[in-house]
Length: 329
Ligand SMILES: NC(=O)c1ccc[n+]([C@@H]2O[C@H](COP(=O)([O-])OP(=O)(O)OC[C@H]3O[C@@H](n4cnc5c(N)ncnc54)[C@H](OP(=O)(O)O)[C@@H]3O)[C@@H](O)[C@H]2O)c1
Ligand SMILES: *[C@@H]1O[C@H](CO)[C@@H](O)[C@H](O)[C@H]1NC(C)=O
Image (cartoon, rainbow, N blue to C red; front, side):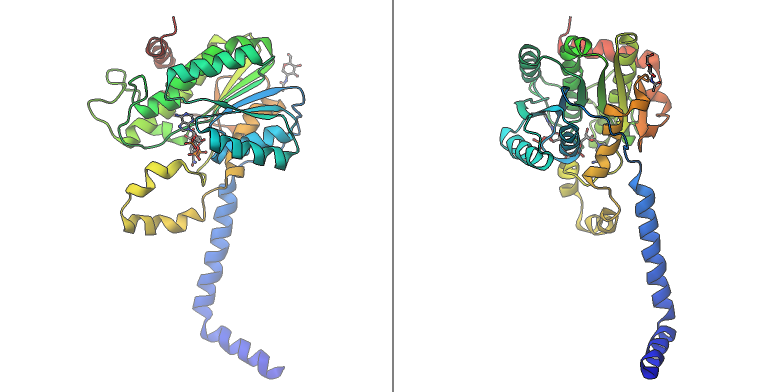
C-alpha cells in the first residue's frame, strides 16, 4: 500500500506539468462546451389539435424540431424535396414520439411551381396551420441557379420561403394565434442585400451569397411582422447556433486537407442538432413570446441583430423586389 502511494506520488511529481495541462485543457473544453450549449426551451406547451409545417425537416435542425413538435402532440407536416429521405425521417419521428400524425409532402424551394403546388395542397387539404417553420437552407454552394433562374442560396433560403409564406397566410390567419418562424443565421451580420445585383452575377462568392440570403431572412421577418400587426399571426427570426448538421456539405469538401485537420478539434465544440433546435422551438411555442413579433433571437433569448437587419426601408425594398421576382401580384 505504502509502495503504491509512493508510486502515485512519484508519477504525479514527475508528470506534474503534463497532468496540469491535461486537467486545465479538460476543464477548459468542458466549460467552453457548457458555455456554447446555449439556451434550452423549457416551455411545456402542448400542441394537441394544432398543425405545424416545417421545411427541410428530413435532417439536421429541422428533423429535431419536427420531433419536438410531434412530442407535443401536433400534426406535423415535413415539407421536403427528397421523398425517400423524408419518409425515413417521418418513420423515425413517429416511432420516437409515439405520435402517428406525422406526414410528408413534397417541396422543392428551388422551384416556384413546387412551392405553389405544396401551398395549394396544404390550403385544400389542411383544416388549419398554427405554426409555419421556414427552416430549410443551403449554404455556400457554387454559383447554381434555381429552376426559375435565381441564384440558388437567395432563391431557396429567401425567395422560396417568401412565396410559401405568402401563399399560406390565409390559412395561418384562420388559425390564430399562429406563428411563423424563420431560421436565419449569425452570418446575416456580415451580409448586404445587393439590390443592384441580387443574383450576384457580377461578383459571386459562396459566403457573400449565404450572408445576403440570411440577412434577407431577418428583413423578411421584420417586414412581415409589420404587415401582420393586429392579425394574431406573429413572426420570429433566429440564429440556431453553430450546429453539427449536413449544412457544410458543399463547403467542407472544398477545403484543403490542412484546413480540415485544423477545424477537426472545433467539431467537438459544435452543438448537437437537439441543441440547435432549441431556439426554433422557443420561437414556435414559448408562452412568453406570444405577443412579440418581428424580432430576432439566439440561445432562446432576444438578440439585437446587425444594424442592416433593422433597416425598415431596406426591408420594404426587399419585399417589393421579392414580390416581383416570385410573381406575386
Ligand atoms: N448548422 C448550423 O450551424 C447553422 C447555423 C446557422 C444557421 N443555420 C440554418 O439552419 C437551417 C437548417 O440547416 P441545418 O444546419 O439543419 O442543415 P442541413 O442538415 O443541411 O439541413 C438542411 C435542410 O434543408 C433542405 N433543403 C435544402 N435545399 C432545399 C430545397 N431546394 N428545397 C427543399 N428543402 C431544401 C435539405 O434537404 P435535403 O436533405 O434533401 O438536401 C435539408 O432537409 C438552415 O436555414 C441554415 O441556414 C444552420
Ligand atoms: C398576450 O396578450 C394576451 C391578450 O392581450 C394576454 O392575455 C396574455 O397574457 C399576453 N401574454 C404575454 C406573455 O404577455
